[in-house]
Length: 312
Ligand code: ZN
Image 1: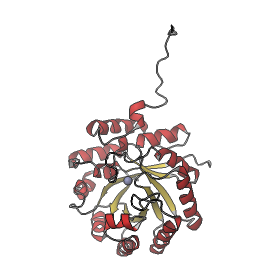
Image 2: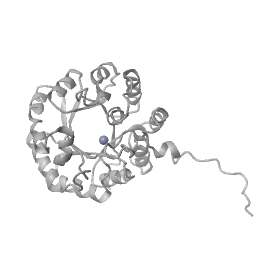
Image 3: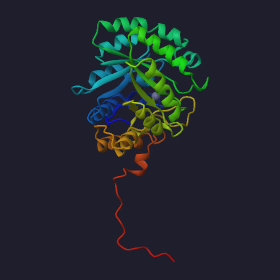
């Protein structure tokens, strides 16, 4: 590991978390929670998704949410954008960064975007062109990058093919997503290393779901390969549409605590994060999953017994 000893955590619960709740979070409450989140020190927050309201009703208030939250100076507000209409809405809402959604495999892409991967990629061209005349930044993503529920392991050749197209579009900020928690530390290393060799000037981030309890190990593996940018979700909110009872994103409090314990700075206020995570867990006990909310921080020492308990 190198000497930077610092990572950037992007909070995604307002999008990935709230999107997978069975019922939409009321707009007022959403605004209140995002405003709390914006006080924790995050440099980037994924606030919503500009998808069609019929496709994802939980995100139908995207425009209003953006308009009414208190935007601190210097925080990048990111939103998912599936098409030109979504990008126009994001621009009107003064989103800082629009994230394109792309699946690594044709079958997952057909399921999500009703187009094969490269067809979906072709559909990004007008978005990139439109963004050129606006301060909005465009970032890319590769979901199911470390395993697809339909096709299994994705070969590195596919990632390279996708990144070549992203490069042609001028998109070099790429989120590699383990959407269904199929990654392991070795596959993270292999794909991250392979892509860094091919596209050394790209910026990569990791979006890790904790579906099989591997997310923090995967984050550490990514960090060892030079990744310093990670997504996470308060209280572990978020789900997996292919495994209804499975965990969602790695919990923000778990990844922050884990890195801090390793001496790697996150520059975030963990106590504030825990307060919001606790609140979310109380409201959505079935949708949250967090080690820290169960066990507390390592530094929360118990009071030592004054007298030795005698056994027998
Ligand atoms: Zn996700």
